[in-house]
Length: 381
Image (cartoon, rainbow, N blue to C red; front, side, top):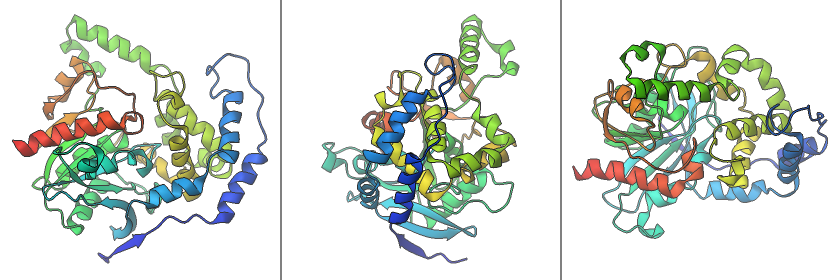
């Protein structure tokens, strides 16, 4: 195994961009099924509008250049090339921090955070906690190699992240993540408990099950019933991708409109407090994420967490750890905190933080402030 770190720059062939535009132009459109709004999935007119903008209004080269403004690298870990952004801070007391994206997101998820986190002085926050920012692409996502055999877990990825931080010379560091990243970030502690100072998560620290019901009071039972009602909506992508990821990948890999529809379906579901995703996220930001999946052909390989399962052998909630402090951006009801504290040392659980699921894309300023508050408290302590 080589430990070499090689510079990397995104440069999508123009032929691939032209092919995308041709495929969008030649889309064979399905008729709208009876039923209003999103009751049958992504509305046909809504999708046509997005596809038209992707073809004629969105400029990949502009956003490719923006991504290339961040220093990027490849390094081989565990026999796989790992792609990552690495933005050291000019501040001498900066804390190294590794950010892990979710699904169906990518390193694009964090592009609005990197500047303020790494150089707060340049973003009007002089004296705020600064970070040396590391943002890797999870194996199978973006420009990182996909898993080549079955059985991958988030624990294996966490071990790769610990090795990456060691390779970059960071002896002590923090971890942060949401969605899939919320599974990986705590596992980094278990991979390198003496090196991680704290774990910050967007949410998802625990979830009640039927086994928890006997210990609930009346208010908690009401909360649990409300949660179950909310979970009945949407598309169960966990089950779909656990059962037949290869089948679905054919459509997403061959048709940009099929991929766009799938992504919009999920981003709509993940923004329940908004009418449509673009009400809370920039349209170009979403399309840059979708384009990255398209150009790298990773719509199939990125589904491995669902079909391989996670650290407990299934799609359970993140493995708890009480070795270092944990903070969350939005932890949910008191019931969630009580359950989370069974396996985690919670020191940061604010109420009222804005945003839906992908808060780094929706509320970058609030997200940055919360990350600073959590890690700043640890460093000061």
